[in-house]
Length: 169
Image (tube, rainbow, N blue to C red; front, side, top):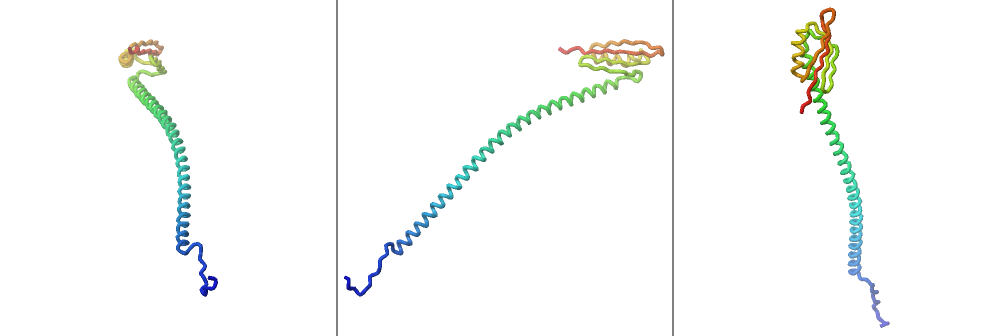
C-alpha cells in the first residue's frame, strides 16, 4: 500500500484516555505517598513529644515526692512549734497565776525555777502573814516546801523558800 491517497494517521503509543487515566493514578499515588510521609513525620513528632512528656512526668513525680517529704518535715516542725507555744503559754499563765498569789507584804528578790524545784528569795514584813498568805499556797501546790527566815534589824525578814515537786509514778 504504498500508493494510498490517505495519509495514515500516526498512532500514539498512549492514547488520550489512557494518558488521562495514567495522570490520574500518578497524581493519586503522589498524593498518597505525600500523605503517608506527612503522617510519618507527624507520628515521629508525636513520639518525640510523648518522650518529652514522659520525662517531664518523671521529673514532676520526683519533685512531687521531694515536696511531699518537705511538707511532712514542715508539718512536724509546725506541730513541734505549736507544742512549744502551747507549753510556753501554759507556763506563762501558771507563772502569772503564781505571782498573783504573792501578797503585797512579800517582796521578791529572785525566783529560780528548775524542772523539779522552785526557789524563791525575798523579804517580808510580817512572819505570821507570810506563813498564812504565802506559804500555804506553796504547800498546796508542791509536795515539799521549806522556808528559812532570817530576821533583820528593822523587824522585817529575809527568806529563802524551797519547794519541790515529787516525781509522778
